[in-house]
Image 1 (cartoon, rainbow, N blue to C red):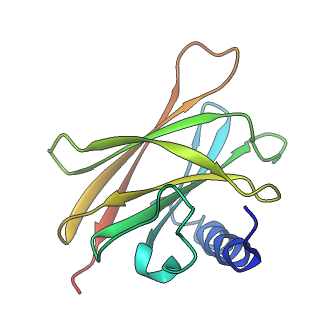
Image 2 (spheres, helix red, strand yellow):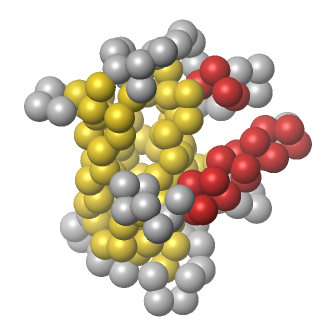
Length: 146
């Protein structure tokens, strides 16, 4: 990622997400991994997102951002493959790979369409080398009214 403004924006989003870590809606410890979730309206990063995951369109577009840390050592996990499924509660949803982002503050992210206000389930599948089964973390996000 070569855009310094985008790096700053992503770092800010990550810091805000970690600051909310005491709020279990955005942080979980699962099988030795601390999983931090951020959900950011794409409008906040418009202009910076052209090369990022193919860009984002419309008010329904949100950027899902995930940071992973080893629960014991606190070291950032940089070798994972992460998939996310985002769906209105009770619906099938959309599944995408979360792409590695930034060299210094590696996190994983992609854009998803949250068509209407309401509650969404975000299921993360985290694949690590040498581990057969993925680590699964389920989060809920409430898309606000506009």
